[in-house]
Image (tube, rainbow, N blue to C red):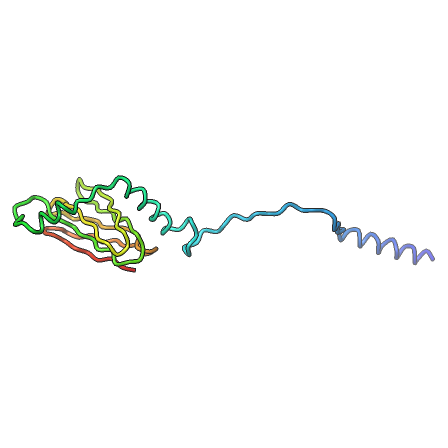
Length: 151
């Protein structure tokens, strides 16, 4: 009988040490932080570019008239030239053009073009995001220059 009581006590202690389950206890719901990926969440680069595009469109002044005047007239002695960017992608984009003493961001809608007048005979860095793809190029611009981007 002593063995049976000792065995029962050991068995109860063993079960107690394993823990108990209280089915009536409500545990708080744990919320996990979203993981940032480049597959369409609101924190992706495409979403950031779209926000920047919308903000720039509110204040951006197009230089299309100046560029057309330059291209249609004999402007070989003009100290400036044009850079035209054609966006053949399905995404709005913001292209950054930077050079010596020059910096400009150009919002370009999907399937549209944007252009600017820049000082001639300089190296320019052209960069931007086109539908989650990075575009970056350095180009020496001595006369009118056109680039086409697509996804």
